[in-house]
Image (cartoon, rainbow, N blue to C red; front, side, top):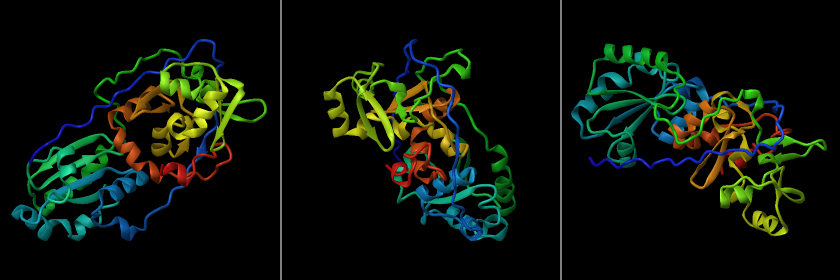
Amino acid sequence: MSVTSLTTLLTVCFLATPDMEVDSGMPTTEIRQDVKTPQALNQWLHSYDEARQLAARQKLPLLLHFDATWCGACRRMDREVLHRDQVTSLLGKSAIGVRIDADQHQELIAEFRISTLPTEVVVYADGTVGDRYVGAVSLDAYVARLKTVNGQNRLVVASQEPQVEDTTDPVSSKRSCLIELHDGEVVGVGGYSPVALTVQREWKKGSDRFVATHEGVAYFLQSADEVQQFNDAPDRYIPRLHGCDLVELLQENRATAGSIEYGSFYQGQAFFFASLENRERFVNNPTWFLGVMADARTANNERFPFLSDGMMNN
């Protein structure tokens, strides 16, 4: 089976200018999560997208079981192991299990570099790929495997150093991407022009004389032309989630404004994070976090009005 190389993630470090005011921090908002019924959890799923959404929501590892109808060892596992009560009772508790038909999902075969069937791959809650199991095993051995999978679940900082510039400043000195002004208006990217940031990759102060508002967040631009440019295609210029930390939202169930010091570009759009660790997690596996992003929900839109169903599914 052919294996294609993964797309390389290019990141650009954001460096804030020293004249910017230090934000005192934004309060967080709890996220409401819909809960699957036990019956829906105690079974093998067949949709990769549904399974990774559920794994992210339940904070459980994702267990990908690759097989095929023509594979004799796979059929034996299907008959003697996968549907036994000892196994299905652990699905939804130790891990979220999904069966992947190798003939129908060549893109996943390539992504996870599968060369032998059956093969299982563990993906942790932060998108990090973990242990790999090759070949058929007995029922007892498989049950023992499932019982250990969740014990391995953890947050893992990216092993490959991303192209970012570290900083030794204390967290309290970080500058928020969302600053609440005295009149209560929430301003994106700290009052800097999102057009200049996206087009020129430069931090240029906007002006409160040239303001454009999108999804409850105001953006300061440098001129009337920039206002028009922004209004013509706001989604091109605004950071994803207006600068809220995507990793924090999905893993910690709270909305937190990212810091200007911890930003990166991915597929032409800016992302901000509340910590260097969260940025590294995103850099390590951006497609995972973007794939499960639609599952996040906010119970309170008062401070973060843009965290709506429509925004999360963009």
